[in-house]
Length: 364
Ligand SMILES: NC(=O)c1ccc[n+]([C@@H]2O[C@H](COP(=O)([O-])OP(=O)(O)OC[C@H]3O[C@@H](n4cnc5c(N)ncnc54)[C@H](O)[C@@H]3O)[C@@H](O)[C@H]2O)c1
Ligand SMILES: [Zn+2]
Image 1 (cartoon, helix red, strand yellow):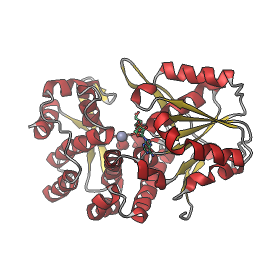
Image 2 (cartoon, rainbow, N blue to C red):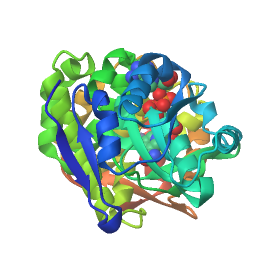
Image 3 (tube, helix red, strand yellow):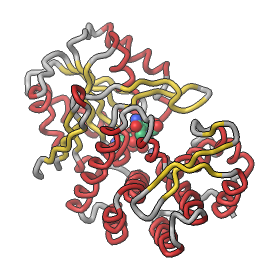
């Protein structure tokens, strides 16, 4: 078992620690008690994660004297629905869970968003903790208190801000994660490097494949820690995304359009973001925010990602429609996160013709 590292998300009375430790899942019971979470625990998970880690999570809590119970939902995005939230409310009510109980979200971003939403709304909000089990959730989704579910008219349209009591990251859990999912999570790490930390970007340049293939677990832990620090800093400055938190959307305006235009079937989230970053880096370079050399470095790193799913063949005008449907589009003026050097970013108004050219660069 590795050493435990603690990173704090500073939010005044809502501040909380993110614990990072190889093998840390074994500490869940101890941390639960240390945080004064005395009541019963509802471990919300998905069926895949339940099989892999449910017994260990349950045992840890029970050995600490906590009355805990596993509540699984099917794996996959379709569980992030009002229907599944409703089923979870029913389980909690039938199970006699009261205001003193705690939700433990054990899983990837889907479980985190759904369980967090249920915790935010059940009995007007109960306490919860996050145990993210995908790389994407460890470096991104589990930090910052955004919870939510999908509506048939769009993703993440229903939700709440609800900060957890603590987050426990155990990088060892990534050993069972399919490599494709690890690459998807790494795309978000590239994003952090590009918008905020050139050194992190350089670490990825030297170690990308070793990180994805878990050949260097120490390096991976270091990269996860740095990503969590960056996300924690940004969330501390801007919990409700009124300003700087929007910079986390680098690569996402185009990325979300790629996901939507392919009906969420073709790309994993990080894969779409990796393509989106290419297009948005192209725009950054066109606007003079990146030098040709810097732009080439970005492309070179992103070309090392698996190229299985590509945006070619997607209709440009359909993509334009989705881009302008994005939350950040006010009338036909689009505000995009563009890079200012490697490690810096800003929100910039971009013309429609330039966006079209960026898509041309991507899909041709
Ligand atoms: N709240 C936020 O700030 C935020 C940020 C980014 C993304 N998200 C949300 O996160 C979701 C995507 O999250 P995700 O990429 O983690 O997907 P996911 O939760 O669907 O997990 C991906 C797959 O991996 C499986 N899995 C999880 N952990 C595993 C493990 N350790 N070993 C083997 N298999 C494992 C899951 O069962 C699932 O099939 C999206 O719904 C997105 O909207 C939320
Ligand atoms: Zn993302």
